[in-house]
Length: 210
Image (cartoon, rainbow, N blue to C red; front, side, top):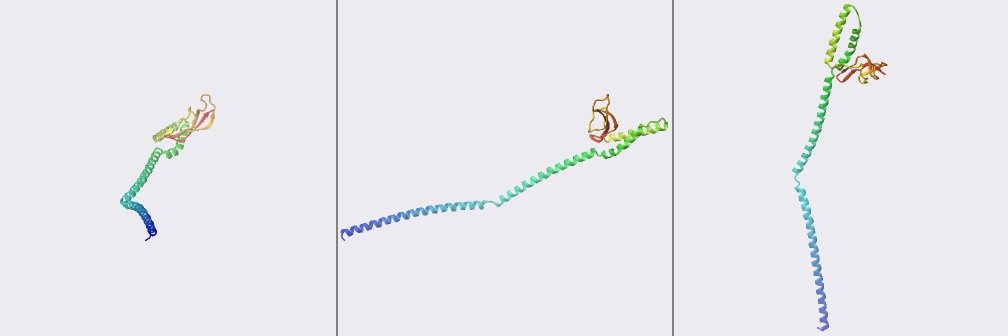
């Protein structure tokens, strides 16, 4: 073999060796990439597996307990609301019963007032006859007995004459000019007024000084 051919063979061998080295490097790089990819895939698979395990770890008993606790809280709120409404209703009924008890005689007293007026008018009639006086005394006794019974049931006379005019208690029907009274005072009571405790049954009909 000539020197020239030997040199050519050596060159070819060098090129082959270099190509083999390059191929080896590429294979090594590919192996590293594949290993990295496999590691990343492995991480993702591990994370997915953990998430799946966490979902599987949710105990249905815990969920049932949470549902029951929510239901219990809702029922408690409904109970408290109904209890408050019932207490308000009970207080309202008690108040109404107390008011009805306090003013239970109102209708009866209102119906009797005209009869009292008639008796008082009859007592204003004067007469000298003994029989008349005897009759008048009997009517007066009935009047006093009736008033006592009515007052025992809460009836009260409204004071009018000499008092400052009060539109809640008095009904002005005549205007007066009396120097013995101040302006706005009641100078005369024309018809008695009555009230049941603090409720006016009938205002007094009065004259009011101008």
